[in-house]
Image (tube, rainbow, N blue to C red; front, side, top):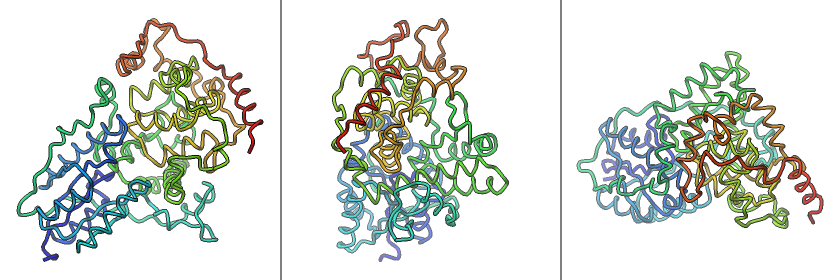
Amino acid sequence: MSEHSPILVWLRRDLRLSDHPALWAAMSSGRAVVPVFIRDELVDGLGAAPKWRLGLGLEHMAARLEQIGSRLIFRSGAALECLNALVKETGASAVYWSRTYDPEGTARDTAVKAALKDAGIEARSFDGHLMFEPWTVQTGQGAFYKVFTPFWKNVRAVDVAQPLGAISSLKAPDSWPESESLADWSLGAAMRRGAEVVRPFVQLGEEVAQQRLDLFLQQKVDAYDTDRDRPDRDGTSCLSENLALGEISPRQCWHAALRKREEGSKGAETFMKELAWREFAYHLLWHTPHIATGNWKPDWDKFPWNEAETDEVIAWKQGRTGIQFVDAAMRELYVTGRMHNRGRMIVASYLTKHLLSHWKIGLKWFEDCLIDWDPAANAMGWQWSAGSGPDATPYFRVFNPVTQLDKFDPQRDYVSRWIAEGRSRPHEDALNYFKAIPESWGLSPDDAYPKPIVAADKGRERALSAYETRDF
């Protein structure tokens, strides 16, 4: 029976048809394949922006599957209950999926796999979300890496598996199981009016992701070393939202960049290093899962972080700190759903060091607002900025957001694009910020631009004073 019965392929953050090991294995079996997505408690727990972006990705993936004669079945509820029901309805004898590495997802998948196997169902998990499985990269002593530079030196020399080809057809079952309606799930409800503003900036689906990668490598990668730090320039790949949902695989990005590196592009090497940084984040999330919820360095539990929703924190969230680099970056976030990486470092440093507020406040805010939200990158990025994480910026390194702006946005093009107050002819994107934010904030482009809530020099003094008197 198992030689002819269907295989369920449980999709998660792998919304593509190319380089998809789980789908490829199911297709290669010659058996019918039933792709399924389950809206379980982990999906329901997503923040507003990533949940909305997931909905768009699922809609696109469903259409792609239709194009090759397949379907995407939608079910909601506990994952194991949904899979058991589909096994009974379809006669499936196997369930395949791509691995996740966050603590909650890993716990769910481990329990599901054990239960399915106990019931006599083949349950297999596959790679694909990462280039290197976290347990395969080890130090010479057999331990995991805690510092990025030696991690990079290790993986730089490792042969990454070639990407699998694109799937052009999947065998359909004799009859399809019933599916819930994706539209009825209303995954974008929490975005409210912000969805209309952010939608033009979304680069949706596998085809667009591949085009974006090709364009980056053809036109931008040679200057990537310097331009990636310049928010006033279009110098990055902008693939983060596609990687987050698996609309493109890291192996595809790596091998494309490797070819450019072999042609002599120094920027390609830097891009590959950034891909490895993503891997390092998952490496740490797997080996030290507490990084997602608590200080990676336990001594920082003693630090007197502010954890309250103070007026300063509210001003930070609203992009009204009076510090132009911080405010421009926060407004970019609300209009595009993303934020330039240099901006992420600046806003994180300002919140955790100038305002001495807990990195968890920023972590949760990004979790709600980013369309490219990634559990590993978000956790490591915030703790790196705060000083509490692995390979973190030293506690005494406090970014000066004013001099950083002078260095990376010298003509103030970035600031002009995102800040409307005080300008006779504001940029359209600056005005769209006021369309995207909650009406309850009561903000208008006619408002006066605020004075700094904490000046750059005063914030640095306050931060250093707090660090120097810490009791650890």
